Length: 203
Ligand SMILES: N[C@@H](CCC(=O)N[C@@H](CS)C(=O)NCC(=O)O)C(=O)O
Image (cartoon, rainbow, N blue to C red; front, side, top):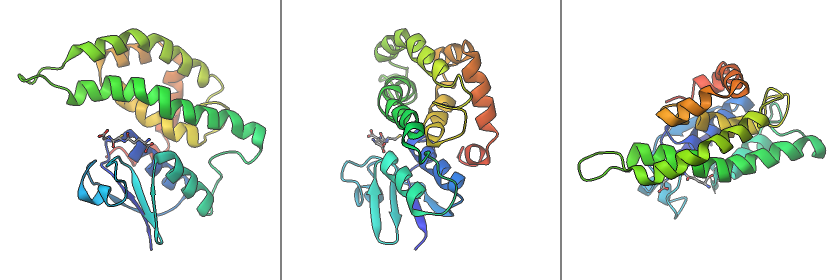
């Protein structure tokens, strides 16, 4: 059975696993289900996306899905096989999945996009706290891509995790301003944006 990736396309983690599949050269069916829909909850009781189905295997958690796709199919290795080269890549995947996602997506982008008061206005309290923490986070990422890609000098799975977040954060003013102050990050984003796996997973 074909690989199925389930979850609505604006989710950064759904885009990540779609990028991984495309970079690997694996055809897949994308099913754009919403979080907490019956289709998602049938695989993930927590209702979070993405979820995956392949040949009788059902899987949740973007990192587990990305690792499965990387290991189960032919194609370029998206994490180096040498342990010392893999170490910084795995470190960055963890940092992006936890600290970076929490601040830039959950406590900034998602607050702007989905948390509105009764009149439909953006609720500023969480956003304002996050904005104060943006410069330090962007400085971390600016250093992280100094060699050209996240954690090194070649494209890896870590870039599949970071790029969707960097795209989303630029849709809001303080995110855009911080991004614009980071020359390495701007050059990195422009470079990786040219990859078909990024362009083809925007929607
Ligand atoms: N650790 C999970 C996080 C998944 C996650 O937070 N997905 C978001 C969309 S990007 C979601 O389903 N949000 C719905 C919710 O929090 O209720 C993973 O890496 O797959």
